Image (tube, rainbow, N blue to C red):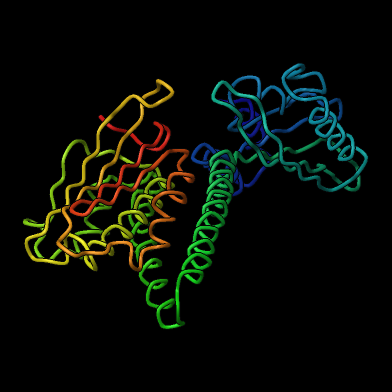
Length: 341
């Protein structure tokens, strides 16, 4: 039996049985919660506790001003001591939120300090401590998530603004602008859906191909070949490579390989050693062009995006080579953008 229960048992003779049973049951019920109750006398000596936190945290809450010395910050020690002194001087209640160092990081408690007054005389201090560590961790995680969402939203808006500016620059009419801009926004949205569904981890290359290229193929089995690895791309890489794939697919269906039923596009990914001697990934789009095609006829923004916007956003390099019978796009990006087994 704990000290609090012993003292309550000793008072049974003077207290109605129903009240004694209620008090005992209430104290016992605390063991099913994260609530601790401690009673200190006027000399700040602990007379009894119920459900006291284990270890030095409980000692700091229950003991005098020196309890837990060296573990609590000077500021928190002063706050706790001031709240106790205020209770002894007649202040009815003080409320504190404090964190205590712990091997796992920190434990957080909400603490109420009440004066135990009888006929205006303060006889002691009742301390109620509720552990709120899980709640604080959820709040911290939510704040971090909101910061991340804000950061990613700003990045996404910057990408949209760039697309709008460049599309407008290379569009002859409002109708032309709206058609191209709508297609690019849909491409961005498709990549964003993949990133969101992965809890912001990213997307793999084959998923991007499925969302950005296959819908343009007359016959995907005949028109599209995937070679090499299937790298997992981080969110930024997924958005920009998705945009590159969209530009290449739109160009291919308008003027290139996918403008005819038997055309072929090959997409390959492989690890290479970059110009700086570090590991990198090379992504290659290769297509055989039909006779008399002009793949750059309406693709000025597409070329800009492929050769400048996308590689710059990924700290990589890119080349777009157009021969009479072949179009080849090579994008090389550093390892922080992908995982390739």
